[in-house]
Amino acid sequence: MGQAVTWSSGSGERTGLPDQSVKAAFFGSSFNVVDSNKALAEVVRIVVPGGGFACMWNHRDVDDPLQASIEKTITSLISNYDYGTRRSDPTPTLQEGGIFGKIRRLEERFDVSFPRAEFIEGWRSHATLARQAGQKFEEVIEAIGAVVPTADTVNVPYTTNIWWSVLADA
Image (tube, rainbow, N blue to C red; front, side, top):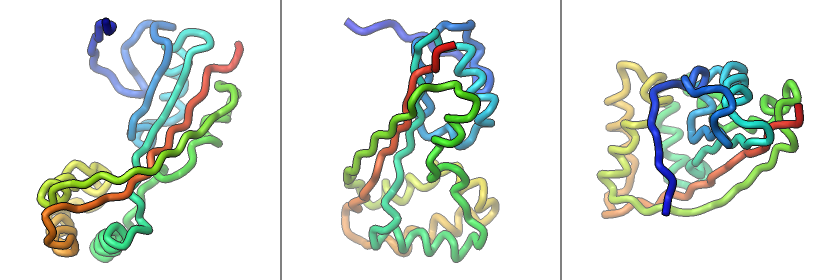
C-alpha cells in the first residue's frame, strides 16, 4: 500500500525539514515565486545525496485564439502585465553553482474542457494576475468573462513543462 504522508508548514526557502530528510524536492507552479538561490540552497540541505529535484509549470497555450484574446484583454487593462519567470526556462538558474547533474526537460501537451463558469472563476486563483491587477482585479475577471464564448464548455490547450535533475556528486 502507499506511504504515510506528514504535512508541515514551511516555504520553498525554509521548509523546516531536517537535513537530508527527503529523497526529492518538487516545486509545482511555485519555483517562480520563491527566491531561487535560497530555495536551491534549501533543496541541497534537505535532499539526500543523489536525490532529485523538479520544478513544473502548466501553461495555457497563448497562441490558441481564445487564450490570445484573454491575454490581449489582460494587457489592455494591466499595461505592464508580466508573468515573470513563470514562462521562462529555469535551466540557467539550475546550472549555477554546479548543484545539479544534467538538467532534463519533459514537455507534454494536452487539452482540458471546463464548464464556462468554472473556467472564468478559475482566474480568481491566478496569483500573478491578482497581484499585478491590484484594485482592477474584479474588472479584469469581468473582462475575461466577456471574451469567453457563451458555450457550455471551454476547451483550454495546455503544455506541462517539467525540469528535473539529481543533486551533483559532492
